[in-house]
Every structure is written in structure tokens, then in C-alpha cells.
Image (cartoon, rainbow, N blue to C red; front, side, top):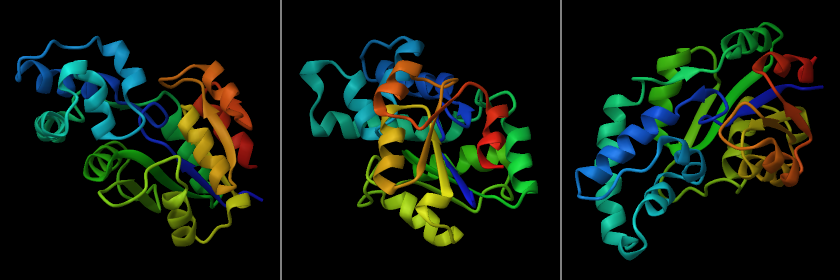
Length: 216
């Protein structure tokens, strides 16, 4: 019996790509670096903000001081603009409502910076949909470590085998497997269906409308 569904955020619950790319490119160009193509950010995201910045900088400037400088500019800009273009994927709001109606507990576990994750989630979905929202904070293991999945399940009151974890990347599938949860790949997201299959996703979903069918 499924009691809980946990979600990744970027590329799973919402299409955040344009706002992430715009803020990252602002941080780059305002410091004299060339902008990256928006579509390329699909492969830069997923492992946290610091890793994102490292990936978009030139090889010669991937040092801690520069990364921290660009990270600060990006974060300040993104906090102001993270909802400019970001929207839930088609059918997601309806899928979440169906899950809630059946009493299934919902949560978010993401490598996105915690404060920006909360702003995006609460801005798009309000505060009554999710039992918990956990993003990255300094000193907290990031996915694929299952730490935040276990924290979420403890808060919700569910066991790993009673939970589906849904994400759009191989990191998400690995996270689910590390936690002992049922894994489902969001093929509508930033990464490819092939990546999800290679990671060993238990299920591949092609639309948010398919999510309730996994649960009941």
C-alpha cells in the first residue's frame, strides 16, 4: 500500500529551466564570462547549486573563490526571479489533487538550494499540498544520499516500501534505490528516458496524469 509520494523539483514538478538559466547567465555575463545555452542547463542542474556553477565556468576558473562569487550573484538574482517563467508541468496540479484526495502524503526532496526550493514550491502550489519540503543546506548530504528521503518519511510516518520517489534523472532513481523506495522516472523532465532506464527506474512515466495510477 502506497502511503507517500516524494518528488524531485526541477524537471519533475515544474519546468524551472528558463529561470535557472537566466539567473546563471546573468551571474556569468555580469562577471565577464560568456553565457551558456538555455537547453544545456538541463545537464548542468541536478547536483546542487555549487556543482551547477562549477559546470558553467571555464575550465581555467573552476576554483573555490570564483565559484563562490558566481554562486552568490546567481542566488541573489534567482531568489528575485525564480518564478518569472517557472510553471508546473501540465497535469501536475490535477495529479497532486487526486493523490491528496486519497489521503496520500506528499513531499519534496531536491538538491535545489532550500530557500529557493521553498519559494518555488509555495509560489506554485501553495502551502497545503506538501507535508514537507527539503532542499540542500550546508552540512546536509545531497542526493543520491537518502538522508533527506529518510527524514521526509519519518516526518510523514511512512516506510520506504510504502513510498514512491519520482524524479527526472539518474541521480533521482539512485536516490530512490538507496532509500529502498519504489522509483519512478519522469520522462517529461530535463533528462532522457534512456538515462532513467539505465539507472534502473522501476517505472517510467510519460505524463503527470499517470502518477495516481501507480498509487491506487
